[in-house]
Length: 129
Image (cartoon, rainbow, N blue to C red; front, side):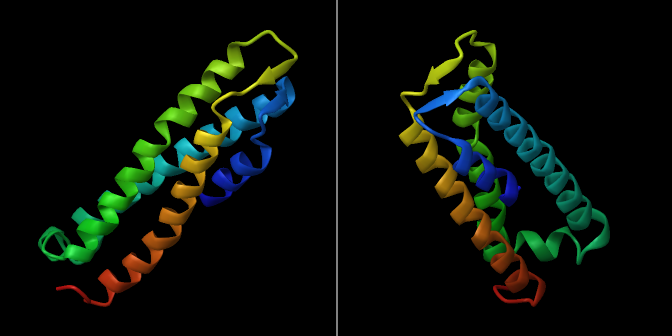
């Protein structure tokens, strides 16, 4: 997920050609796939392979971690919709007026993705219970 966002951040510009826009769409698709897999495996661990649902749901750090993951998903909606619209354009040079907003959203997602593993380690070590 992190790598996909870094690719998006490096490719994103105010003016892009169609090839660069295609890279954004592909990177965003990979982000979505890996986010979905992370959610699925996280839920499997919580319900079947981890320390049990009760252990996780009483830990405030786990709730913060889960909330951060959900917030990353919500923050990614606007860039995803914008990138999908870019795919439909016929122009060779694309002027992306909202690139600053999207860049800020991606930077925020990256920062939150850096915090989530720290919270996971704290939860796994029983801190917050």
